[in-house]
Amino acid sequence: MTNRTAWIETELKNLQEAGLYNRIRTIGSAQGARLLVDGRNVLNFCSNNYLGLANHPRLVKAAQDAASLYGVGPAAVRSIAGTLDLHLALERRLAAFKGVESAITFQSGFCANLAVIPALVGKEDMIFSDELNHASIIDGCRLSGAVITRYAHNDPAALEKALEENRGKYRRGLIITDGVFSMDGDIAPLDQICAIANRWDILLMVDDAHGEGVLGRGGRGIVDHFHLHGKVDVEVGTLSKAFGGVGGVVAGSPQIIEWLRQRGRPFLFSSAVPAPDAAATLAAIDILEESTELVDRLWENTRFFKVEMRRLGFNTGQSVTPITPVMLGEAPLAQQFSRDLFEEGVFAMPIGFPTVPRGKARIRVMISAAHSRDDLQQGLEIFQKVGKKLGVI
Image 1 (cartoon, rainbow, N blue to C red):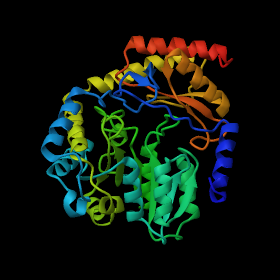
Image 2: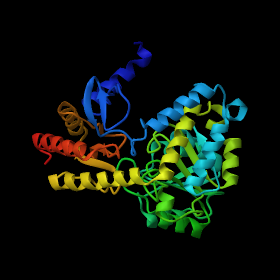
Image 3: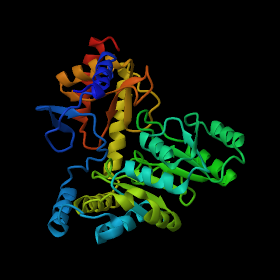
Image 4: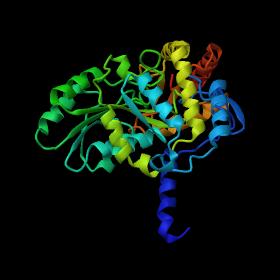
């Protein structure tokens, strides 16, 4: 270590002393209801594998077949020699699934936000962003150079007030909200926000990363949930949660999607999504279009777990989705709670500042269709044991 980087060592020590140091565990198995974590077989309450598709045999087979036909790596960006017929097929299927005219895929949901926001607004423009929007939205907003105006979380009146206060101060405006907020599990009042966007004739974008495969008819997302088809300009999503693979998607009008093909920087300057990932997502769409069974099971598991956690005396915040925050307050308590859970056989990581505000540290439980009722019951018993040990309940 040189003097030039000594400050990093100091900052890392500060994180450890404040209980904010992120100790990353190692997974040694496929995603599922149970995982091999740091060599131990434990119940998985951490993953975004909402529908249990990440290790589904049909997705695995589709990926293997695609690797045999197309190889492993794309070897090029989409705009030069990286666009496969698989990519185009996937984009058509995603557009149809979401009920929009067109769609474009990216390497991740994070990349999708970094692509679409700077392509739609710039230095003469203004973004109206929910104060709890995801980090990828925040970074996309910063990259755009537009003026960023944050409004109070899930507060349509605050949004309208911000629009009124900034009337005439920008060339183009863009409202951005998460659909499902990943830390608290609450849902944006998208119907009210959409009405405001229409009154002000301003672009509306929703990041549906945690809504796809979860909300709406057969998992079609928050726009379907609120019956707003054709009324939301931009839907951003990820293929790495409910869909079980990896990648990002932007869905909307043909004009917006074509503009992203021309000016979306991750599309132009980063290699394409590998063929196995695209093929796996196509298989996931097949499964979702065939039956609502997995989505129904996800919600059955969610309702059971939430009711029982509250009965035990835990505070699960404002969540109305499978995301179940177990509110603990301070980061050191959340870290100790996570360690004790792991010792008892449950993998559920602590989340503290800066991911959530100071004083709002939590264990975030992610419910999945892959969990059996026995899995959930075992998890509840362990949460009760640790909660009593640490004086939380």
